[in-house]
Image 1 (cartoon, one colour):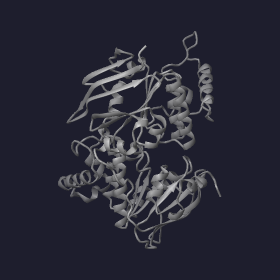
Image 2 (cartoon, rainbow, N blue to C red; image 1 turned 120 degrees about the vertical axis):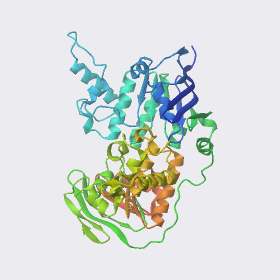
Image 3 (cartoon, rainbow, N blue to C red; image 1 turned 60 degrees about the vertical axis):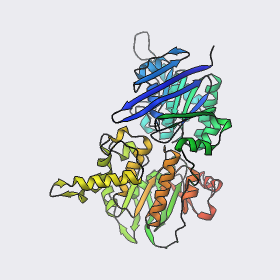
Image 4 (cartoon, helix red, strand yellow; image 1 turned 180 degrees about the vertical axis):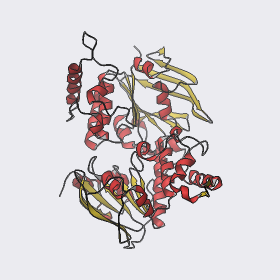
Length: 497
């Protein structure tokens, strides 16, 4: 029996005005973890959507276990034993965990009705085998993003898929959950399951993968054995050049001028007695484990969530921020963690998304100054290197990293004094990360103050002037630049006193 499980040959896919894939080759062996690596917009997710039956290929061939496979729907892909765990959760929030795991494959009684008891019992047994402290009858919407991600993985594993695609599976997981995921992947390898692994985190690729295929601009660049390559070689394959300095920080002289001060901020059951200050031209990092309350603090400051107690001062003046418009008026901008649900108008164009927060600047006598709007969009597309065929392109059709840049553009257009970035580089490739860091560096040099929430410790350590570490809804410690190490941050993030 051949060891080759999947072969994709000369795969081509075209969208209006752009080739997403141009003759891409990819193969997968039994019991192998094969990574797909490339910048945002390189075509990785598109290739996997062709494999998963979400997109139909325009040209090329797919064979599974040596036999040609015509995949024109998700159901056909599942019939071939293909499961895709998407970066954005694809479960139904108003169903229980058990109902989500068995959706479309519910066990039936002899009468033809769903056997709910058996479904719950089987789901609970599998949840327990993954050592998750969850009840199969819980509604999915009550789970954290990390827990929902684990349910997606359980669902794929439960139905014995022979090919599992994992698209940024660790982007919302804690270190403990990542360790557990990697143990699960090793078990799947022993069972001869083939895993296609998409991630921008180099350390993960070297820990978990056997081979790495690199794509760039919709084309196949090459495949290497993980043990025989380095991160520098992979970056050069990805971007066509070397990135000598990923983290860009220029020392900015401390001004001592407080642009933001938060005193005793509390929201029942979420955050408690949170106090900190932010100086002009400073990057203040916020670190902590998933569920520590970092994003919740930011939503309170920006007026998305109400506070029960506490004060917010902007430029030493106490302010009332009851909604996001109040925050924008005070010079605060917020780039949320979940760009698709909380940030972007996915069915609208790039220029619409960039200009929506500053409409008043180019609406004159009930008429839109299209020329001004167009120049604004062109400026941000150029400066942030947004890969799009044109500014009229619907945002939904852009890659995740380019969607993130569009969202950045919208808030930069408001000319903020205080910029809150929640996981600014999640799901973003190494070249785009470098561009985002350079942009942050440029902004603080101009006097903008930045709060950066991040789960990536190297990012927090290299980009921050100080770091506030949160634990169970409180700030456990604020660390100065000289004390920033991964060990110190994790000590406080896990409750160290």
